Amino acid sequence: MSALYINPIFCSPSNHKYDTVDYYQVDPLLGGNAQLESLSKSIHGRGMKLILDAVVNHTSDEHPWFNHFGEEGAFGNPDSPYRDFYSFDSNNNYVAWKGMQHLPKLNYANEELCDVIYRGDKAVLRHWLRPPFSIDGWRLDVIHMLGEKGSAENNAHHVKEIRQSVKQEKPDAYLLGEHFFEATPWLQGEQEDGAMNYFGFAHPLRAFFTGKDLNGDPIELDAGKLSTWLLEARNRIPFANQLAQFNLLDSHDTARFFTLLGEDLALMKAAVSMLFTYIGVPCIYYGDEVGMTGGEDPDCRRCFPWASSDWNHLLHEHYRRMSRLRRIHPALRRGDLLTLYAGHHSYVYARVLESDQVITAINRHATKARTMILPLWHCLRPFDRFTDVESGEKFEVVNGELQLTIPARSSLVLVAS
Image (cartoon, rainbow, N blue to C red; front, side, top):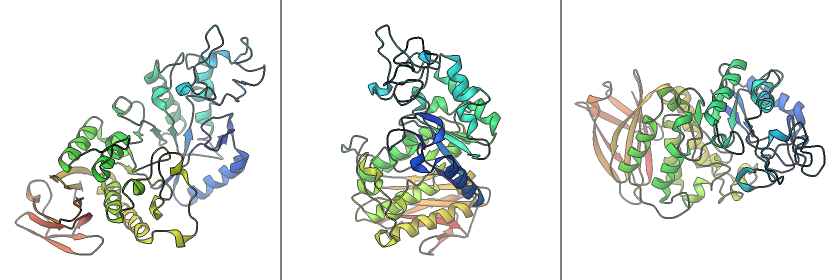
């Protein structure tokens, strides 16, 4: 089932909305609560789900609780009922997210704050799950930083309680955590359903396909090391959480993957093939499907090109093809992953669920095709042939072995037939 995840929409003085001033009101610039209600009905009418962004680690310094520029909130009044919603010292200095003074950090040692945000009957995280909005889950912004007394103290306790409250309200709600790095402790079944899978997908694919690390510096990661990285990340978490991982090539916090590739369409298509066939939930950052470009934040947040004449239609069709394939094949949604080959430039894996089998073969080499013989007899059920979903080319299985030739800078996605 498809879903729409949108960045913060609640009242805020900024355009990015990660500095909330009212958790119960959609910003009027975005249409207010009535527009969210309408969007929810439209989304659900299409059989889709709706995920909102929960920014509950910090607020805006203009939030009434804090009220930096007045006398009634925590900043200007030591006797404010909201004083302990934040962390102050004796000189009225307060803890802010990453030292950004306009983003004072919330203090979850305060029981009333816990009630307001997640625990109470009218808590923020419960409110939007209910009609008429009926959202289907939350993406928890910088969730690893949430905690007590200006720190992440007791983080696991609060995230577990957030999960309990959300699941009480809507048992099938999706709870997604933002983690830019390794997130194993949050993915053991008691806290998050999935994480934004930077560590176990986006980072290794960036290194493999673009030859760049997170800082944009050169890095060499061959297919063997890519396979090891991906395997280790998978093996650290239960299978149910593997299936729920939020896989992405890029986001509002990173440069566009197409830009990192130097707008190499062939390699972008190969990366998209992995996005849709790898274990987990594929996420399309708006505009990637039509070839949007952009450097590091904020350049990656350009306006969507609504004129279809500005689209890369070959890339768009590949996204559509891969999306259809995922809907058709349950192996891509619920199946296991088996690595079939990992050399220097080439990586091949299969997704398997009973008789449904899909093989993805990647070759990133700039000029050379790669021919290989894959011994399928020891890991897959016998089929006579596989068919490439893009070209329709048939590949025969002979004595349990499949011979493939993967062109340079390309991918093959094969389905059993």
